[in-house]
Length: 177
Image 1: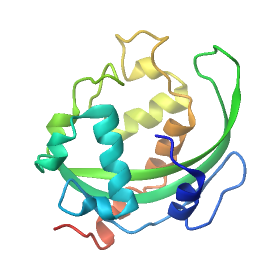
Image 2: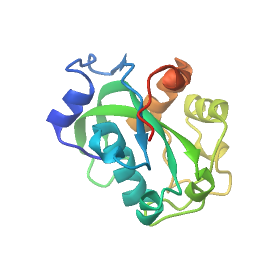
Image 3: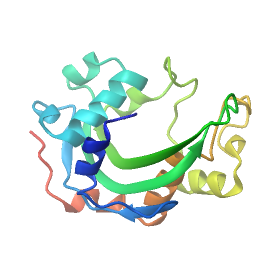
């Protein structure tokens, strides 16, 4: 989800990686799907992307989906248009926030207006698919023109998973309540 550059810089603590690189971060653990979760930038962003791209916001309001989240990486690269429509290259700064769904994960599967297929996958399978540049490894029946595995979003996720930055989520203080 696109956010203003000053907000991304704040989440990254003012630190930026070199072009084409990743910078590991260990941001504070925040809640989403709970009362007051929107008072943290991380919680607000996770709830925003969930309600904009995946679920109805009422599921967050009713607290059917809850969890914790934290900034784990900032990445910087030139990103090309994966559709190949205009050949544009866009300098991109991406902040990767991991989110662990502790309640209601079953509601995140299926499809949405933004995604034709949403499912939980094994982290090793994602890393294998990315290294092979083969999204159909994950979704064998998908239209190859509708799936992308080579973007900065997946690259950043693979980096976080391969550095085991996701396991550190439980070691920071959560503001669950």
